[in-house]
Length: 403
Ligand code: AMP
Image (cartoon, rainbow, N blue to C red):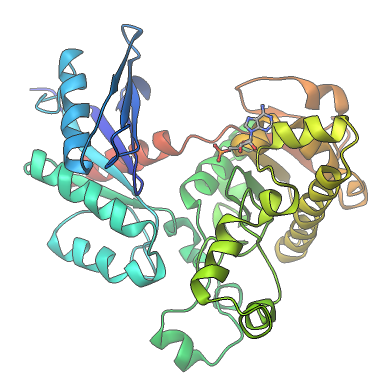
């Protein structure tokens, strides 16, 4: 019998379940979909069978992740792609926080589940949902390898000088406080694809990756290994994001508690959900912000400038961290689509080497591409991220190795 070649990728959020079924012979998508508002009366499942082009929708309550995955399994079965198929090699799960423990994709067993559970205090929003997804999938196909792919894993190569905060190490270690970084699957994929775009091996190039989505992070990748990244203990640190503040003086928190009379939970919500672009101007969608700027809106304009200023600071910092840089790569919703963001982020950095060619920058495409002029000393690239493909690739490689 030939070996199974399909991988189901699951990304379980607190009230959502995104999935893709891939055939790893050619990395093609067979089916993609999403269940949202799990646990509410208005749950919705959106399913597309890529091979037939058939798209279906289900509306109505889906009580929990167990029911959601069963509904997904039914849809896949209708397309002849059921979870009971002998062609399914493994299920790959996105897990947000792997701490220091998980440096690589890992086949899930009871011990692995316990360790992911132990990390809940540092990832209270994400790891519980990821665990639910794994447990549900395991119950449905106990015989199948389940692989956890961690958002933090790519960043575990950071040196201690970048990973540690300047606080007493005993206190830090007792509470597992250090800089972990997130979006690692995307940074790994995009830095590798950027090297490919330059016609080089990842081990030959230094790349600054700017993952600019609703969440946003930068990373410095030296010869294929992450040496610094902008998110820290949690995804709150670093760049200005859709609704997160990114870097601020930690004393702002004391000040809000003491002088602003806010509770820790209120401050947490303020900084994670009501700050960033949204906090600054009331919108977190870059399309809307650009539209407002075009109409002369000063609030939107200032929000944009603060957003760009922070990106520039990180690019400059990572030039210093890396010493030499071969490329700056933009990715994720904003990075892939918002030409004015790319233009503004690189403007004025020509002395360091990167530059943007306005005509190349304005081309809309889903393909990896260079947007710098041929004369630029440092290439600037747009590289669409593909976290699902990366999770599937890592899952398949691990399962293949174990067979
Ligand atoms: P992500 O988290 O990677 O899915 O990115 C989502 C964000 O990308 C949205 O909140 C928008 O700000 C941004 N975005 C998506 N499409 C566009 C576009 N065509 N132009 C500008 N920004 C976009």
